[in-house]
Image (cartoon, rainbow, N blue to C red; front, side):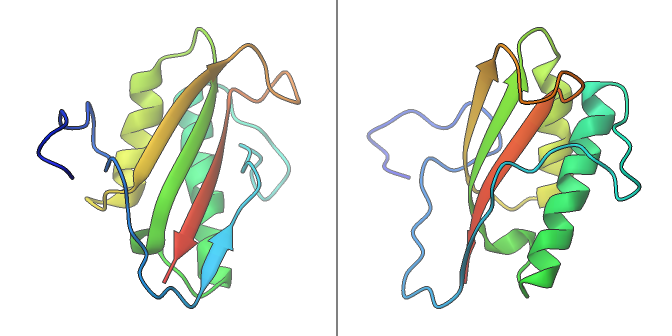
Length: 122
């Protein structure tokens, strides 16, 4: 991080440089649908499902959370962002990625309260 700008306001990096990356994964927005097709109530529970789905996608690609370089999170307005950020921090276990959080009026389905897209690279 350049010392000429302010530190991030949460647990993320302003930027991540992936040098000579040979393996890069771009996801669509990952939604809070459990493997059985259910969508839990509440933003915290939905965030946990989304991160579980992201970990499964990473595993399938031979990558892990330490390979995530960028995260874009869309959260329906009016829901506590702290629960979303806490789920991200638990999933990343200290790894810092570039991260943007966007409040939105709605997502594709009314029961979805958040959606997360990532880029991972190794």
